[in-house]
Image 1 (cartoon, rainbow, N blue to C red):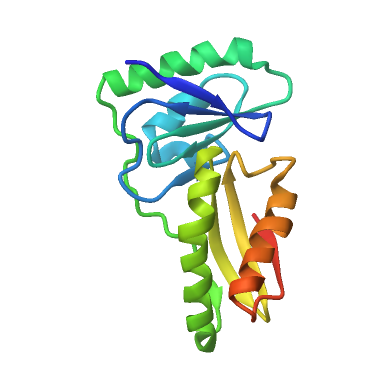
Image 2: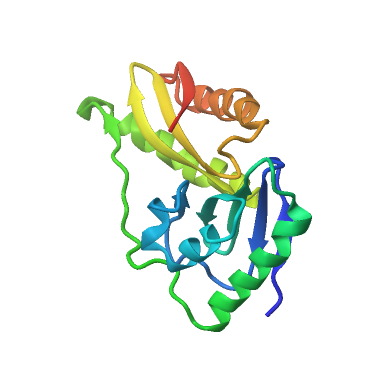
Length: 184
């Protein structure tokens, strides 16, 4: 098994491409070892000192490290753990359903549908290339709240992407959008 690695715009995050499907649908983001308990793969990765976050995408795994650990030390251990997991036929998630709550007024349903469609077709594919994901969370009085995951969470360029890219695009296509903000 050959696993490719790619750098991401976030220097604390590397993207690992195992050459096979990781998630059959959706994504999963784990910021703590406790949260990762529903994923045998993420749990195994959190057992390695220095791992601070694991994001599972359709065909990739983004791993965020702490500031003290360098990639030269961490990368071989992560590659070995990922290879061992897939070679042994391990499961990625014990259950893939983990829908987060969304919040918006019923009368805004059409606007939210437009926003979600734009995020799904124009934003998510682009940020997935960098090992991350952006998920709709809320729409309230013109403010769109998005949750940044994977390499997008904590990325130095995420604010610029959010404001200059996503906010401008949503304002252009959906006039009701006033601003976009990141939420945890």
